[in-house]
Image 1 (tube, rainbow, N blue to C red):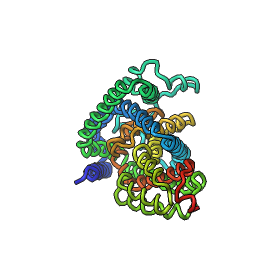
Image 2 (cartoon, rainbow, N blue to C red):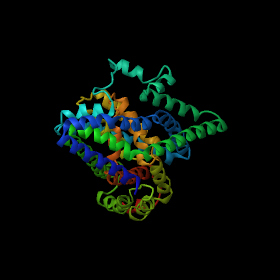
Image 3 (cartoon, rainbow, N blue to C red):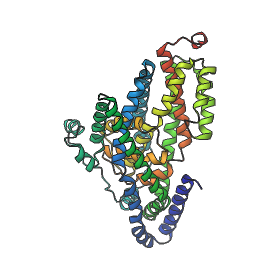
Image 4 (cartoon, rainbow, N blue to C red):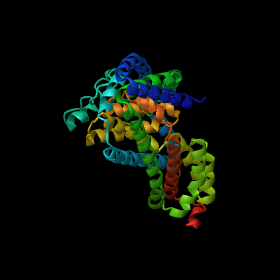
Length: 418
């Protein structure tokens, strides 16, 4: 049985038992929830303990990886700029639409209390800076070690960005040793996360049992809302890549849409952007007439550095948690989350989905001042809309490639194709 199937089995078993307890004997269900919830919280703590060193290492290594890619030439630098702009657009779209869509869905008033009890989190957001000036000052840590100790993710990421860019300015040998050091830290944290994920069926079982025993069917419907929100936003992002290619890439709409179909079919069947790379390269050259020297550089870079659905996932997750707890998000919180989502997504593309979930979603959720306890439950169901995410990522790769080809103005078959 695959890891995903094991986790979903634990989720289903815990939900079924919790619902049965809530239905037959709510008092007994509450007592059982009190017994099992420490085990779920223990598993959640084990996941969270890796986040600070993993995020620090990923951002530092990601900055240097992007810098190395940009150093290979103007086409690579142009590609990175295009990636960042499209990622920013995706994050902004999710920041606007996710709260608006969730506001249309009725919320179970018992859901927040059940999540609070099961995950051991406060039902209210963490204290936010009193003004925009305080928010601005809080972005840069006066003590990076203190920021890490307090899990203050936004100042920690800012420090990691400064550190990563500083490494690009020092000597080659020293830089390589430090980048290798932080890569080793990231690799070690990933090993620990894999160990913790081995116990995920038991941890998820305990978490969902405790929530369902208290909230009943409300938690199941809430998870359905989360899955539906992600799928809808992923599909919208996929569709929006067509006008991106049309307006920014100068590509005829029908031709680009037809060229997308082969890579999208591979993406849907394999749920892997890397496995879709040969189909993307072939479609770019044969169906769109793009110069091979551009596509063979941009598309592998896109698979390595660019995942358009990542910031959408981070923002959808944070907005869902805010909705579940009845927290009204401010424009400052949404802007903070969207900006951090773009930065985090560039450094975490190479990670497997379940491994990266906590390391990527927790910084954004925490920076927005939201409880992070429900992330353990959302990890269990996040793999369900993964096929839509992969199709969206491949569509974003192809759209970005069309933009870079147009801006690079490299002579090739495209110029005669339209």
